[in-house]
Amino acid sequence: MDCIFCKIAAKEIPARVAFENERLIAFHDLFPQAPLHLLIIPKAHYSTLNDVPSSEASLLGEIMDTARQLAADHGMAADGYRVVMNCNKHGGQSVDHIHLHLLAGRQLGWPPG
Image: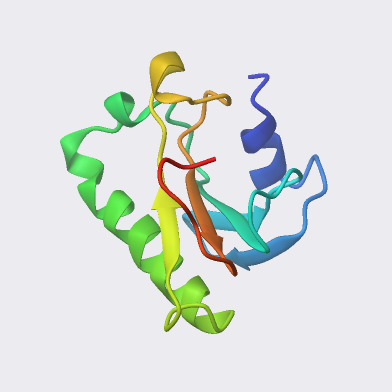
């Protein structure tokens, strides 16, 4: 498989890792859109949110809980943060491996950008 996020999870490509457990890895985005911009991904490959089976709903909850914990660990929870998961081309997904963006550290406007 030629998935850059799978290669990061397998430690074939280096990344600034912020968190890791058996099922997830979180790392700093190479092109941050905020002072704190982490990507939280499952180590198992799912191309899009549409591909995650219902039996893996707990994985999605774990991703969200990890985002909450990382925001707190980085001192960003009280001021606030944004979590974003894009799905497919029209949703803005640029890497075909599900990932959650955690953005914090400045006032984030709407629409995002």
